[in-house]
Structures are given as C-alpha cells and as structure tokens.
Length: 346
Image (cartoon, rainbow, N blue to C red; front, side, top):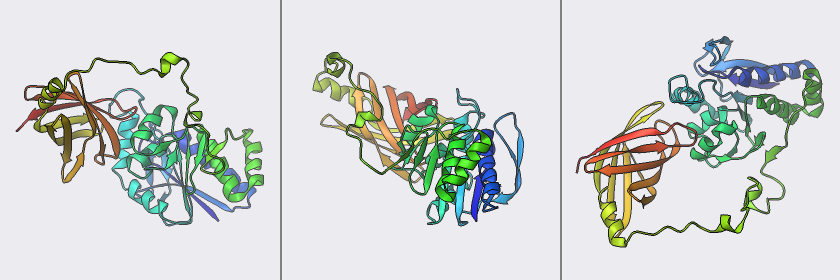
C-alpha cells in the first residue's frame, strides 16, 4: 500500500493540494486500491481554511512522519505584492512556526518516505532550513528567495533529488503527482491516469544523474552578447584614507530593529574597522553570526548574513550611518525589503 499524506495549513493553495489528491485517488482506482490518500495537518483532524476565498477543507488525519509512503506539502495562496498578513511570505512565515517543519524534518530522515512539494511548498520547507544545499524548484517568482534560503534553485518543472521531489508553479501539482505515480507504481498506472484526466505530464524531470553540463551558463541560457558586455565597468576608487574614514563612521555597537513581514527582529550589530578592513557580527538572542563580505560603496555599507530566526534566510543588508543613527534595508529574494533602523550605543 502506497500511503499519501497531503499536508494542509491555514492559507494553503487549493490547486496545489486538490490536483495531487485527485491524481493519487485516480491511481488507486487503476491500481486495485493499492493507494491510500488523505488530507492531514500537523495538529490533527480539523477544518483548514485555504488562501483562496477562505474555502474550508476537512483534514481527516494527523501528519505521521514515520509512515512509509509520500508526504506532499502544498504552497500558499495570497497577495503577491506587499508584506501584509495575507501576503504569501507572511502565510508561509506563520506555517514555518508550526510543528509541520519538525515533522517533515523527521520524515526526511526516514528511508521509506518521499517528501514532495508543489509551488511554495518548497519555500516553506526551505524557510524552515530543510533544503539547504539541495536542488529544488518553486514558482518562478520565488526562485530568488529559494536560493536565499541556501537551497539550490533548478529551473525545471519537476526536480527529483531522491527522497525529495519538488514542483514549480501551481499546475505542476499534476506533474509532480503523476511522476510519483510512475516512479512508485509504474508507467502503466500513470498513463491510465493521464488518459482519464486527458493531460500529459509536462517537461523533463531534472535529476542529478547522467552527463554534467559543459558550461555553467547552459542552465540559464545567458551569455555575453558583445565585447562591451564582458568588459567590467570602471569606477574611480576613493583613496585608502578616505575609505577608512568612511568605514569608521559605522564602528561601534548598534541596537537595530528590522521590520520583517513576520514580525520585528531586534538585532545587535558590532562593527569595527582595522587597517581598512571592515568586520562585523550580528547577535540575535543567543545566536551570533559573522558578516559575509562587508563592502563600503560610497556611503553605504553592504554585507550578507545567514540567519535562522525567524526563519532560515540569506539576507543582504544595505545601511547608511548619520552620526549615531543607522537606517537601511534587509532583503532576501522576492520578499519585500525590510526596513532597518538603529542607534549606536557605543
């Protein structure tokens, strides 16, 4: 028996969940009841409100990370622009702080469990730190954010990485589930479901096998169009003394607040300049991380930071200092830029 658990959370996307439910249910008809599929939640049986017009779906079970089979995680449906409570990042951010992340993490550690995602489902797992260094795909609008979590974005319709299978935009739920039917039950069952639905699976499933690409840019299809594209732009560099003077404007400890779509973060920044080299670290609670590649450009200090709270992200910071006041932004992928304000305390 192939057990399929489709995980619902408040704000989930209907098509992400319903399309796979129908595919696996149809597969059960053709495979002589060899498939069991149900809607589950991390909290147990309950009514779950979708992100599309607030439609309620009844989940009949509790997510069991140790049950062999397939666990499928859909994405969210909400506002694409902005950082309001009904935006997709905010919905995913709330879901990250439920027990679904811990349960799926346990499932990924089981030998006989496949975790699958559709659309923003991979972002949900990535924001929870479960996809670091793993190839995955999500909706094209979220690919930059997926990379900012430490996952490896692959621009394919379906990406198969062993016990992790991810799909792109919302309609890819059909392709993910049909591929899993073929992978687990065989091509004849998958073909029968395709004929029933009058739908043929789209795209080549990306797997980390076979010959490697000859060129890195073969994935993106980008290459310089002219000699001028290859030539770096030349800027006049300030003198070393001037750079050191500018950098010292940021020296000290700063109490900062970052207003993110999922709440405010209080972060202590410690910045120092020595022999023209800028160093920094950020402390949030009991976690301290070093700045990555701090660079002073004109009057702006930029750096990257790997954070784990309120979710796992690679953030890019751009800040300016005016006396003892600091203002700037922190940004990750498609997430709206979060405003940073701070005060120098030493």
